[in-house]
Image (cartoon, rainbow, N blue to C red; front, side, top):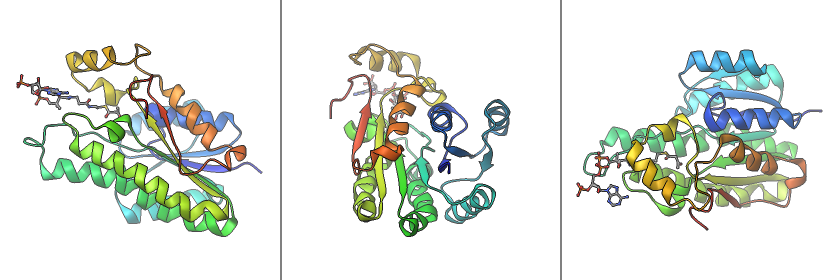
Length: 240
Ligand code: CAA
């Protein structure tokens, strides 16, 4: 029987590529999205993958959203915590709201979604969780104390939860993307981005499907001995 996956933020950008890569592997995929109805509808029309709307920073909404998907498709075997936002700015300019929104969404979202699916995975003796971290969680980045802290937290969260799942067939891993050609990176001022790309040994932005390839590997049936690891996919920008 086909495995069932939730990809948060799965209708756009890296999340969309992950949804498609899992679908290609024969997985039954559900994508969550937070706000962009138009893109979510276009995604579903194009791919046949259902999209469910909720805010991953909301604990109760994650419980309810997961229950809706389980009622429609069945128990969740695979969770990809991909949903994330940026609210960049130097510490001096960063508001408390910008700090909290990013921590609650990017890191809180991983906790909220793991709470919704991890117990069932343990009971059934199988699961794959992949958390999308970032090069900026590994190396830090000017103007991103909120984002870097959240993404760095994801890497710790991954290694801790991996230990809880290991004996029960549930693997927990992370990917750490570098700068990928998505709406999020397009929001970085052009002159700042040009300087960043100039330091990437591969000499270009990554493509969303290049991240999805790594996620799909970690979600595979045959990846059961890989747990607690971080796969860096960043064009050589940070060799960690
Ligand atoms: N190191 C040291 N100093 C830096 C610096 C750096 N990396 N970047 C900028 N500065 C300095 C500038 O030289 C400038 O100094 P002076 O005032 O002395 O000239 C000062 O900091 C202010 O720089 P800005 O004009 O850029 O300041 P700003 O307030 O207009 O913007 C910022 C600040 C919003 C952080 C902007 O620099 C920015 O957007 N940076 C990019 C942040 C980034 O990489 N975000 C990634 C988003 S994509 C993502 O996160 C996906 C992923 O996982 C990779």
